[in-house]
Amino acid sequence: MGKVRINVVKRTARKLLQMYPDLFTRDFEHNKRVVNELIEVNSKKLRNQIAGYVTHLKKVEERRQRTELREEFM
Image: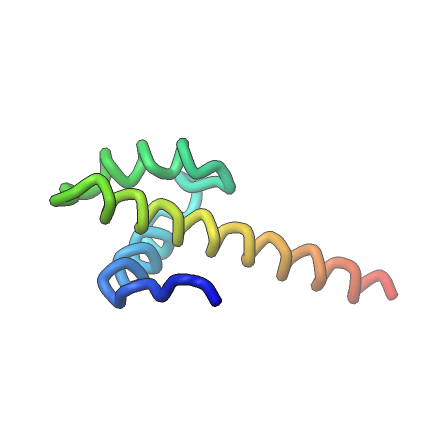
């Protein structure tokens, strides 16, 4: 079973993705730098958790888009 993310991480990541959808990618290192520039985070651990969740959400979004495209052509 995986680790549970706290609500602060989820809420912040979703809000950042909503406000700046084009700045984030599937690359964790890139997202980590972007999160660091956009918001002031108290700790490295929290910044990394937010960047990791943003990365996860971008991957899920891409998978959903690919699935929708496949369904259109069937």
